[in-house]
Length: 286
View 1 (cartoon, helix red, strand yellow):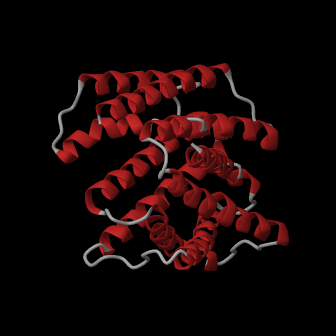
View 2 (cartoon, helix red, strand yellow):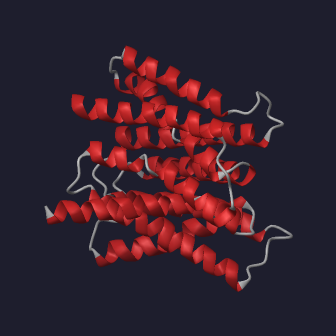
């Protein structure tokens, strides 16, 4: 029981920290590419130290190098689109729209793994679509909220692709090892932007925020999340992970004075209800 309680604490802290990640999109006065690059390099250094200290496997298995590189590219695109969505809209809207990815996964996964597409998945996809429509203030990309929703959905599709590629091609690695290689690739891919003409300066406050983002809000939650999986069911993890939009909305209000409209609340509840149902259904059928 104590080990399970400890895992629940670890998971809740991880989800809370992931929710706090969204605050850095507006809290750090740098271009999004710079934030993602430096976040990734810092997190890679910390994760490498952790893996070496734990004497865990770090090396990539033969034949997996291209897949790891592709996973890093997809993670890079996921973070770039999500951070840009948060910057132009609100954190709550962006994270809620991003969380459409589990239902999209349920639609795409059967075709990749030769499984049967279920009618319930189509119904859930329709429910998510309704939730997104409710959140959209107007069908126009001139509206920044609509732009944020669109970018967040694209980000969710990249995240879905990353998860499906991991399931199909890369197994036998710890969560921390997988994350290490992906953030390393992301950091290296974006490294040239730091040396472009007119690149940003890095005052002490900005450096401190980047270190906080890379260590406490990237490497630490990944480590806690991986550790919590040892004593928790997939159903418990899925339900608690759905708390992230709530954490994001609260932190957005407290830190950036962001408000949540009634449309966002209603549409978000529809999306989260579909996700919770999909999570519970998949676990019960496993």
